[in-house]
Structures are given as structure tokens and as C-alpha cells.
Image (spheres, rainbow, N blue to C red):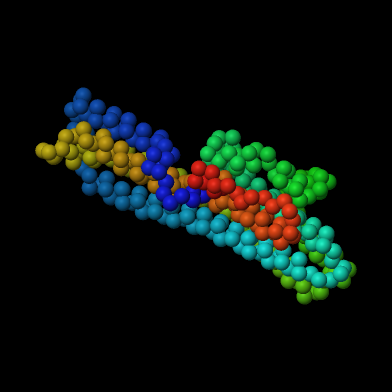
Length: 328
């Protein structure tokens, strides 16, 4: 997530330089061919503008849908923050002598392990994602190192080595951790450590956390429908391919403007349309670990700090750093 007020124009151009350069060379090639051959292959602008309107509507739909996915992902992790605080407070408020502080501490630590496991599960690449290699994320070196170390380096702070080894044998590590939490609460109730009412309340909080995990997995494992993404790209290419011919028709008819102005104006229009498409494309998968995704690493760190301070532990990690304007 970018946290400064505005992107710098040069950062935006660098991010979208490929369509900009392609548009420049393509537009120049069209005009050079016209200059050499003098074949009147210009097209009237009116039908091209109709196609452009259709493309604009389609890109608007695609970008709105992509933003909805990103915003839903942020709301899900906001709920995880709230429910994490609630379940930790619920555990720490248990006053029965049968519930030792070490048991409470282990429960909270296991919850932090769940947060870490879920975070790393959401970062795993999918075939439809951009799958940028973690080594290439040079603008966020702290996040880069965290990703290269993997989940085990973080889990060992809160779980024993046998627990981590057992956890690695499961396909869905976060689910197994929540299941363990539920079983521990059941054992505590059976031993008389908590009342039935308190047990039901804490199990309901675990269910809410399970719901949040399931909703995160739904966004992660179900892509933005590829027919929408692919069709939007295809019709964008068609429209942009026609732009130089339409502008050539306009500048040809003008006594004041030379037809070579087709090149810069076509380049700008094509670049804008592909930039808008690219923005939507990079908003479809809010957990893939790109620079503009939901900052789940930072959110997980916020939960970690809150819960460790609740335990009054001495070693509290620092807030997740903002690196070159990005919060991951």
C-alpha cells in the first residue's frame, strides 16, 4: 500500500513505461508508412470514438470490480484485528485459579502463530497473479527479507520446534491452529476452568476468525473472472490500434495542425487507456504481495504488538516500516 499523498509522475511513467514506449513506436510507424506511401489509410474518428466509449465503460466496470475485491480484503483483515483483540482480552480475563498464566500466554502465542501462518498463506503465488519474485522487490528490503525467510522464522517465536514440524505436515496450517485453539478451550471447559457461557463466547470468536480466514481464502483462491480481464485487454488493444488512424484523419483535414502531431497525441491516449487497465489489473489480487496490495504484514504486526503488550512481554517488535512510501 502506498502511503504518501501522491505518486510521483516519474514513478507512474516508470511503472507503465512498456505501453508508453510501444504506443510511441506504433504511432510513429503508422505516420512513417503514411509519409512514405501517401496511401490514404486514415479512418473517420466517429466510429473509433464509439469503440472508445465502450472500452471506457468496460474498464470502469473492471476497475470497480477490482477495487471491490481490494476493499473487501481490507475489511476482512480489519475484522481479524478486532476479533484478535477480543479473543485475547477474553482469554486474559479468565480469573479461575485453574487457568494458569502460562496457559493464557500459550493460547495468545498460538493465536499469533495463526496470524503469521495466514499471512504467509495469503502471500503464496497463484497462476493468475503477477507472481513477482520476492527477490525483485528492491523498494521494500525489509518485506523482501521476511518473504525470503519464510513462515518458520516467525513461527519459532511462538511455537516449539515439535509444534512447527507437526504444523508443516498439514496443507492448511492456519486451519489446524484454529482447530487446536478450539480443542484447548474444550479441554479447559471439561476441567472446570471456564464456564459454559464463557466457552461458548470464545468458541464464537474462533468461528468469526474462521469466517475471516475463509473469506480471505475465497479472494485468494478465486481470481477475478479471466473472461472479463482478458476481454478488457483485447478490446483495449483493438481501440488503441485504431487511434493513430483516427487522429491522422483529423490532423490531415486541419490547415493549422501537421499530421505528425498524430504521434504524440496517439501516444498519450494509448498510454492513458493502458494505464487505467493496468491499475485495475494490479488491484485484482489484494494479497499477492505487490506494492499496492492490502498491507497484511503491517496489520499482522499491529496485532502482534497489541497482544504482546497485553501479555506485558519485554521484547515487543517495532511497527512494520514504511519503505520508500510503501507499507506491506
